[in-house]
Every structure is written in structure tokens, then in C-alpha cells.
Image 1: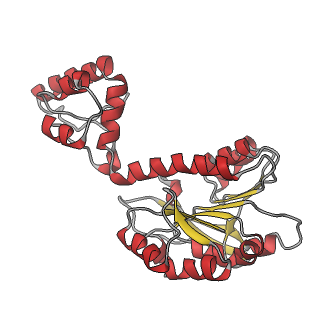
Image 2: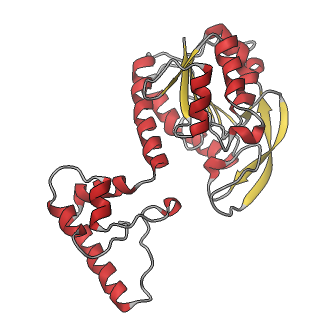
Image 3: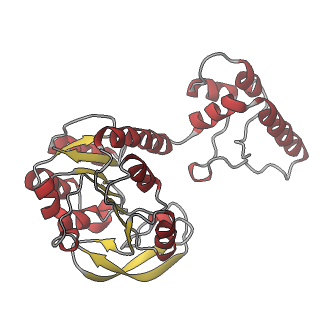
Length: 300
């Protein structure tokens, strides 16, 4: 079990005996030091000091034997705001899917990655005809094996049909996309060629009505929407999408582009996953500028 680093003092006592949930002020008062946000859960290195080694071993033993739910609560309290936001969004997405999907709903997962969302879609709509797009070969193969009843396509949805360069971030494959962009740390990259599809082209000769379209493509969502807008405008499915500063702007796109497609063309309304909305263009642009959330949904 990984543990966070703590200082001596009252922290362990607080973790073991304090009543009620741990608050950030209590954590600060009792001397817990949060690790770097990109190294959450790792012990801060103090082994070059004998007393530090003794302290870390003692803390690890106490947390291992007396931590339990309190340790989990402590770790959650120390998580960066972005991690907490992602966790809440995932919880809310499950509730949204459960409310929106019938057993035979058809769903399209764009950027299926490891299949976390696809798993929920298949569970809630076991009789639906689902399509998943995943351009990375290894992830595509795993999804094919795990979900034999799903049409898993080794392609990237975009606004043209053909081939394109795709940047595979080897240690953080979830950050892969059409373009290289700034990463929190130095990353090893592999440039591969992937097949691209327009959803409007892919579905033009099929009697397929999507209930839900989920889009998580690391900034290329406007390219996906441009190639899928006729399908979305015709059937007006629930569209769950990621749109954030630091990714979309690398493609020269922003809230105005999303708004023009989903609201003005497809006549949908934009909400956040907490139920806030419907957004105006100004409030959507402000949420994008603040960058305190990146996940949204569009619906009738």
C-alpha cells in the first residue's frame, strides 16, 4: 500500500481519533505535507537521514495498522482539485448513464481508451448496438477481446476520412492525440499513422440511431463534432464531451466553435455534470476560461 508522507506530531492521533471527516484546515494544522500533484501517493524521500528513515517506517506502520477508512479519507483530502473534480464527474456520469439509457440504447464511445466508460454503457444497455473508436493498436486489441459484442474500430474520429499522424504518449497513453502538446513532465512520444473517419460518413448507409455519444479526444473534440454534426443534428443524442483550456486551444478551437455546432446547428443545450445550466455562450466560455471543469453534456 502506498502512503503519503506526514510529519511527526498530532497527525496520527488525528487520523485515528478525530471525530467527523478530516478537513483541509485540520490537515494543515496537524502537519500533513501533500506530495507533488503528479506523484500523488508516493512517499517523500527522507531515507538519506537516519531519523527520517525511522520516522517514515513508524508512520507507515501506524497508517497500515490503524489507517483504514481514515487513511483513505486523508488521502482524498490531499488530492489536487483536478483529481477530486474528475472523481466527482465519473460518479455523476454513472448516474447520468443510468437515467438516460434503456436496455437497447445505442451508444458511441469516441476515445474508448481502456474501456471505463464503455463498460458502463454495455452494462446499462446490454441489447444496444455500440460502437467504440480507439486508434492505439494495443488498446484496440484489448477492447476487442473484452467486448466481443461491440463494434470496436481502430480509427480516430475526425472531420475527414483518410489517414493522419497520431502522437502516442507512451507512459501516459490517455494524453495521446493528433497533436503534441505541453505535458506536466517530459514524455517519450511515438508518432504513428492512424485511420480517420467522419461519423457522418461511417453511419450514412446504416439504420443506426445513437442515444448517446461520448467524446474524450484530448482537445480534438471540434474535429469530431464537425465530422459528426449531421448525425447529431438529425438524432439529437445526449452528447457527453470533454472541452478544456490547454487542449482544445492547441487545435485553435474554443467554446465558440463547440457552441456553433452543438447549440446553433444541432439545437442542443449545454450543461455541466453537476446539473448546472443550461449554459449561455458567455457562461460556457467563462467556465472554459476558469478551467475548473472540462466535462460537459449537451442534450435536448
